[in-house]
Length: 372
Image 1 (tube, rainbow, N blue to C red):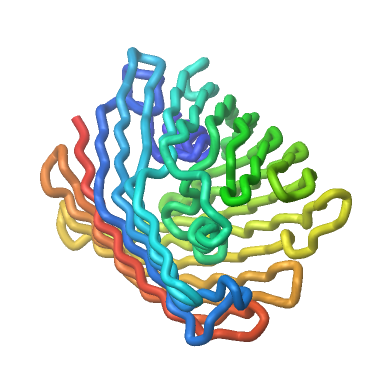
Image 2: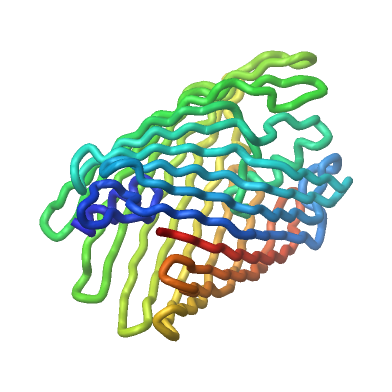
């Protein structure tokens, strides 16, 4: 049963497990808060001359609350206080709330099926002037993977269902969802209204134990979109089809005494979209990421986990990038109810956007979790 719950959690994008006597994925109150910081600096400016960028930084204060509701349902809410700083042709900053996600999870069948309903509450900022739109676009890249990649959109509703079934030594899982997002003004001066289309998503996943000390998890996610519409003053109304997106992920964990080795990877592929009937090759991209972590339990309450990662960005046009990342995570059990995670990362690599530019990146995360 525990393995099938792990797979349900992977299909729904959560790592929580149900305890005995309850069928909900979340069975305890949880609250998480902390500080996240990420910065990238470029040796030469990247982007167009009018929006060239020398550095991009972001700090955020995540706020997450999880609560069980009865024996079969749980609710969680997530938001961020976020600050972005973009330096280049001009210096631009933004500070405010991100959108807020409210999600309900309901267990339809014990350790087999879970239904979800998620609401995107537009508490963030989704409208930027043409001069400051680079603030929102600079943190949205899957290649750089900022903690808060979207500052705001319109009101949204996502309905989903996940189901798992054992098959010999394997656990098989499937999850599907449909998302609707209302229209919003993405750009001001002049005003551009953006009306996103529906998004459909299908995820397949499987996991199994390997011997007595290993475990493997494989997954694939397919997303498709209906046509987006845009209109506004001073522009010609039009439409854009974003193309399909596929994410393939895999992970293997091996436990030897107090040491845990985890090798994981994912590949994000986005096909080129069409803009008013014309193929937009700049929207096509592929991001490949591989990571190795070696965790060592120094004491019953302290785990130290060095890591090394590699990332390759291959967009549709003649651009690209590569990152080499190194860092460490430290998990500390302060008490039975309070735990902390401290993570630090350093990255070096390059990016091509017109011309090649070397880059360096730093990251720091401090999270405090309370549960009861």
